[in-house]
Image 1: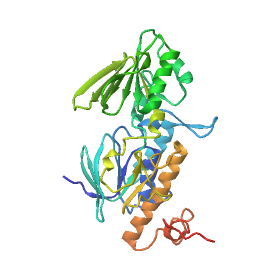
Image 2 (image 1 turned 90 degrees about the vertical axis):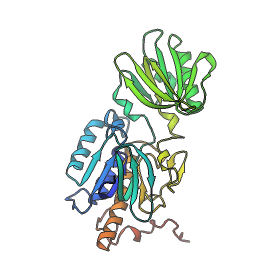
Image 3 (image 1 turned 90 degrees about the horizontal axis):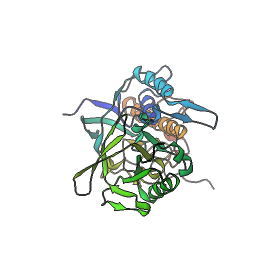
Image 4 (image 1 turned 180 degrees about the horizontal axis):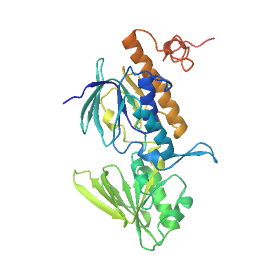
Length: 339
C-alpha cells in the first residue's frame, strides 16, 4: 500500500542525503519555512559509514563523524523530514507524475527524488573496528593492522583484479596468517596463486561477534554459502571504479557508468523530477564533495518545488540569483559558449 505523497524522497542517509533533504524542503536552513515535506531512507543505519570515523578535511583538520551527524540530525528533527533507516530501495519508477520507490517496507511516492547513495556498499561495517577494517591504504600499511595470532583466517572482501592483488600481497607480508578472498559477484570459486581461495557471491548477511565475522553469500546458482573468519578486511578502493549500489535504478532512465550516476553540477540527471548527489556522482570522494553536491542538488529541488507550488522561483539569494536558478549562465545543460 502506498504512503502519502511526499514532496521529496531522498535515497541515502549519509551527509549528502541529509543536507540535500534539509535544503530540498527548507531552501536554506536559516529560519526555514515549512512548505514542503520529505523522507530520507537508507538501507542501513542513517549515516552508518560517516558516523563511525573521522571525516578528514586536511592532514591536521578532521571532524568527528558522530558529532557532525548529531548536528545534522538535530536539524532534521526540526524540519519536515521523516527519516527511515533499514529501508532498502528495490526498484524505482520515474515519470512525468509522481516518482515511485519500491522498498522493503512498502511503496514511497514523491514529487521529486534525490539519489544520494554512497558508492561504497559496506560502510555500515565501520561500526565493528575490532573485527572489521575498511582498507584505504596500500598493503604495506594495512598489514600491521591485521590480527596478531598466527593461523587466524582473514576474509578479504572486494571485487576486480585490485582486490586479488591486495590479498596476494597481504599473504606475502603476513605469511603466518591465512587469507580467503570473497568477490561480491556471482562467478564460481577459484584458487589463486599462493593457495588463497577465492569465493564469488553476493553478501546478504553479516554477523560480527567477539570471535570473528560470518558472511552469508548468495551464489551464482542461487544457492547459499556461509563463510567465517577471525577478521574481515574490506577493499574500499575496489568500489571506486565499479559499484552495485545503484542496481535498483535499472530501467529507470537514469544514466549510469560503472554504477555511478551521471548528473550535472546542479544535480540534474536528465530525468524529470530526479536529482543525484554525493560521492555517487563524482570521482572525488569525501565529506567536502558529499556536502557540496548534496547542497546544490537540494537547492535545485527546492527551486523546482517552489515554482510548482507558487508559480515563481524560490528566493534563496545569495545562494542562487534573485531571478532563480535557471537564469544563471551556467545552468543550461547545453549552453552557448561565448566567443
